Amino acid sequence: MGAGHSHPLHLHHDSPVHRLPPEVKIVSALLVVVCVVATPREAFAVFGGFAVLLAVVWALAGIRPGWILRRSVIELPFVVLAVLLPFTGPEPTLDWFGLPLSQPGLFAAWNILVKGTLGVLTSLTLAATTPMRDLLVGLARLRAPAVVTTIATLMLRYADVIAGEARRMRLSRISRGHDPRFLWQAGATARGIGSLFVRSYERGERVHLAMLSRGWTGTLPPTADAPTTSRQWLAGLTVAGVAVLLAGAGWVAA
Image (cartoon, rainbow, N blue to C red; front, side, top):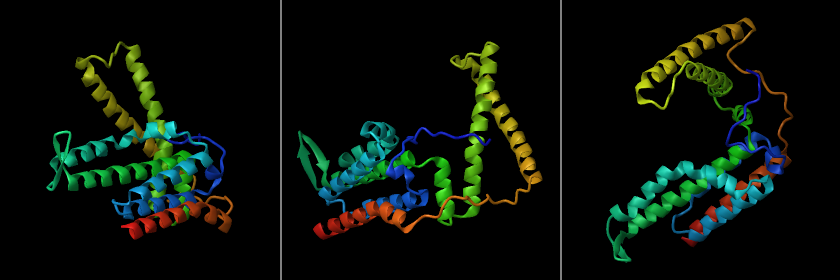
């Protein structure tokens, strides 16, 4: 359980952004998202400024736009909702190639689309430059509830164990003639899932007893990393400072 844990959203690079302490990046990303949400929807140019700001961070971190844009498809359900609003919103309407579109619906769709997209891109940037373990360390340094960080850390470590067990069970079923493509074998798949749950629960019990026998007190030991310096905070919060200026410019323009 002490092995490294990779994540498909993390991009392994050595860049100034990657080297920043995780708590700095968490606070900066949170402030950027708050500024994006607080910006008036009519400030179209300001949202372009947020996109340029993210592009600068990607350049510093060595993240290719295509890499992060492919992972931004997780917001597709919100895009579908935004597309429907111009057709279902209230009056007044405008004519677009013979289609009556609601003006409030268009503004609402734009608001959801641009803010949701920028929020997703900001979160993906944080995940791409910070391993999952470091994110949990950063939350602990920011005085997040200890029980939350402890549960998340143990869940992260135990997820690989469960995934490995599921792979072994699947290979065992296939070697015995199981073919998951056939609908009538869904029962065997369901029984396998139930067996995986029981085996994972029993294994978790054994792991917990082993932890208690080794002096587990309910909290993770503190990390021995060097404390975050004021220069690192200044460098990390520069992006958040620019976001605050952009949001202020949006309110002035509105």
